Length: 191
Image (cartoon, rainbow, N blue to C red; front, side):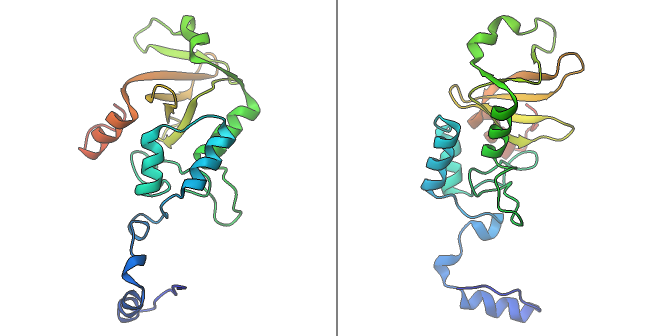
């Protein structure tokens, strides 16, 4: 059924009554439809590895992005971050990964183990053209900070611009699940 914009409260109420009850899903509350399994499969095929299981479940059970800490979790193909006017996936999880893949040399975290700083921040500093292969940008945290998840370990990392080398990557002590639970309980989204 095609929904029209209602011009008054009465019109909105009547329109809502005409929509079958089965059509009222989370997408009307969050603004993004629930992701389909083929969108997950296409995203995984494009990045070359499996998404974290929790992230896949959130896409197919809650919405294809647009909820969560910061600016909202980026969607997979066709999800949150897809500009509706041009129809590409530039702002999605896939769009950010494709940008990194096109502009960076992808490396395994194990290749970087000797580069972690021993300072108070514990940050890994990398040139702009180097990126960990399984690290996915999942949310914009403002001020140039990005929340990322390692698809293999499911640990969270913060990334941003470094004044010295290019990019910094700061390992967090929590997993994707712990980060989201903390956010749901009203905790600091940067923890």
